[in-house]
Length: 255
Image 1 (cartoon, rainbow, N blue to C red):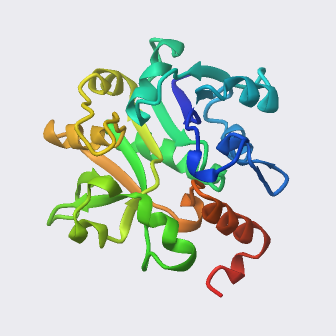
Image 2: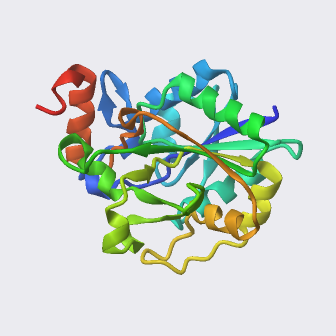
C-alpha cells in the first residue's frame, strides 16, 4: 500500500466533560470517530488505516473492532507531531504517502479524502493540505476560532500556520484556517518529524510546524479549500451541539 492513512484519536477530550472518550461520543447514531472511519473505508485509499490511541485504547478497540484498523499507542500526550511519529514503525518501508486526519472531525467526506490524495500525487510536493475560509467566527462558526490560522505571502503562497494559542491579535483575524487534513511524502515526513521542537505555549510537538520546515527548505506546498461544514471539529459540548444541529437541520445553523 503506497498511501496510508493515520487518524489521531489519542486525545483525552477533557473539555467535553464526559466519562466517554471524546471520539466515542454518539453523533447521529454512531461514535464521532466511526463517521470518519466509514468515509476512509469508502474512499478506498487505505483498506486498513491506522488509529493512534492513548489510554482510551481498550474502549476504542472494543467499540470499533480490531479487524479493520491497526491501533498505535501514544503513551504520553506530547502533541500531534509526536502522535504521528508513533505510527512510523507500523508502516512498511515502501510507504510513499501518509495522510493524517483527526478522529474528532466526523464530517470529512469520502470525496475530500480522495481529492486530497489525488492532488498530492498530481502536484508531487512534500505536503498537500486542505484549508477552509470563513466569513467570521460567529454562531456555528465560533469553534473555528480555535483552529490554526493560514499565513500566506504576498504571492498567495502558504508561508506558515500559527496555532491559536500562539497567534497575535492581528493573526487571529485571518479568516482562512487549518482543519488539519494533510498528506505528506513519507520519507520527508519521517526525517522532518525528528526536527520538531516543543517551543510553544503548550510545550507540544505540533504537526503543523512541518509547514514551516517545508518552507524553510524551499519546498512547495499544495492546498485546496474545502467547505467549512466538513471541517467542524468537536472539542466541547457546544461543538457537539453544533454538530448535532448540522446533522438534523443544517439549514438552521445560522438561525
